[in-house]
Image 1 (cartoon, rainbow, N blue to C red):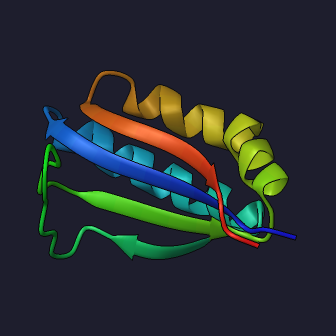
Image 2 (cartoon, rainbow, N blue to C red; image 1 turned 90 degrees about the horizontal axis):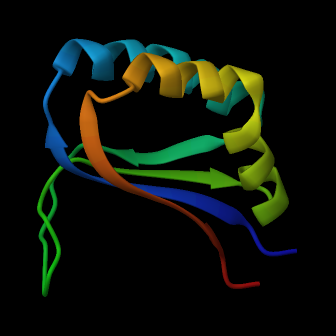
Length: 97
């Protein structure tokens, strides 16, 4: 079974306090859903149309688990805390089996 991944690339962070609140709630939601954060922040080299901003990569045991984690009540509460504090590109992708 192919793994599932959350890939989030931040274009702008307009409210660091909202991001901090989101990070606390999202970390707990991801852990409860069986996710593992593989990369968060750190160095980025962007190519083509990429933006060298904050990037987060979270791994789940399956694509379905990744989708369910995003839809969970705990993660939805994290999104409420984040609200308009950032502009980002968030994707859930299926890994190669």
